[in-house]
Image 1 (tube, rainbow, N blue to C red):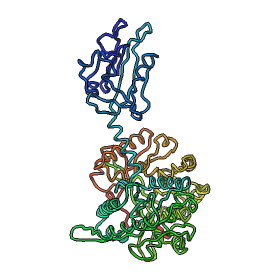
Image 2: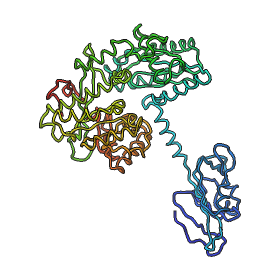
Image 3: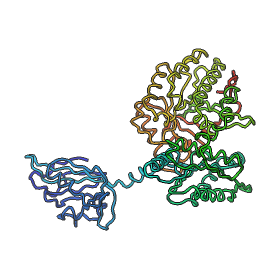
Image 4: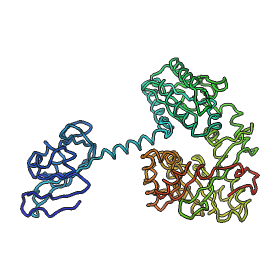
Length: 574
């Protein structure tokens, strides 16, 4: 916007004092009568300039407070009375000539004569409908699962916390349910993850159809769902979940000529403030009940009765917690390697390889992290596993000898380990013991873990960066990390949440969020990585956006040849 010199007299004249190419503009005199409108103002108000000239402002510019619906023209009168710029702070609507309302942002700038008298004002306003829609989509993305559109874990835990508070304060009745699908892995392994994703979407839709409007259905991750039934006696909750299970078990999922049927088990727990103090404890109770349901067979329901002090299902029986301890002691964990490659022209050498943790169960099956890390966190074993990974990874890198020089390897650090004051010392001891250089190691910290204690995370990073270690902040975009917090975390890389990357070619909001994260990262001098790249179309889109690096199964997936255990020696690929 540029100010013109205006007329020489105190009358506003016929020439606008303010012009703008991007904003709507109305110029008024001291009696609040219009003497100029630009074309965008004509479009937004529905008034042609010739008709609007000389009209009282309130007839043409019908400004309303969005919350109360009352006129909000005092913004203009205050500007004329005080000779000061005024702007909307809250939500403001413009009702056009046809009676349609649009959200706008408004500023009012006084026109001043050289002798100090106010000669009128310029009203500058902008339609923010598109901004509002984008903000709503971003808020929705932060609280909903990208694949199914259901509430995500973060939002579900917030609602569960509120339910617990409601039970404590006024006796509100809620039932929590944990639902696990049976035989879902067979679909994934037989016809692929894309088909598995379609199945999850269809199952989600069928479940929603059976629930009441006031109930909440969430996808916690993988094939695990959660229910929060509002104002629901336990007996009614059992009836509801039996209908859910029937809906799932009766559904036939077809892929080409192949058909599949799956099942589900549900564990229920009453939301009772006398039996649980936190949402996490409630989830552990329902999780425990779900495990008991699975022990009974397929398509079963079980109710948490208070046995086991609310321990989670895979921690309640001693042998399940013991399985994780034995996995550490008997070397059943495996580390795979997956490269992070440069998207720049002519660059083919990975910037680093990420260690990916797997577990070989007693039956010989290789399990992904989602199958055992939540249990490890609940059982308090995650810090021991982190230390196993660090020590085993360092041993494997050391075993490569000269081949590992100049190469970097990334290791994930859990939220619980960030709170372990002795971990930096342990890392330095292992570094010295295996004769490695700090610049060979990059630690990855998840966004949610970093935000749980920003001050402690920043201290952890700063302490180890002083030794030469690198850091990646992982999962950017999964939540809504305030960008100003990035300034407090001296990381080397930002890894964008894979759920955004997977959807970027079909979802403009995901695309816009990736673009925003990339721009902010580069402004801060931080390089960006796109995770979970699965196809060439996504890869080309990332290159066009200027993303620095990429990782995912569409580039290279970890293979058994790239796995190592505690005795792997030189078995690392890279």
